[in-house]
Length: 72
Image (cartoon, rainbow, N blue to C red):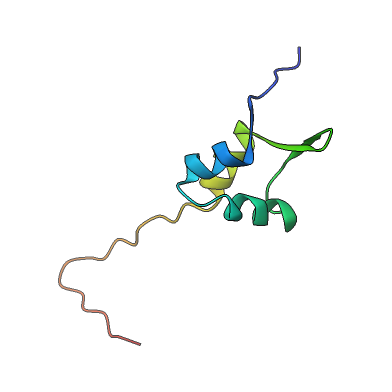
C-alpha cells in the first residue's frame, strides 16, 4: 500500500522553517528539495521538509574542559 505524504504549499514550508517564502522557492529552483508539480502549483511533501532539516542539522562540538582552543 502506498502512503501519501501531506503536500505543503511554499508558504507553509516557509512558516515551518521560519523563513521567508523566498527561501523554499530558491530550494525548489536549485533542485535542493523534492517537490511535486500539481498543474501549475508546486507542493513539497512533508517528509521532504523533515529530510531537509535532518540533513542540514549540525551537531554541537563537544570540547573537553581544560582544553583551550586557539583562534584561527
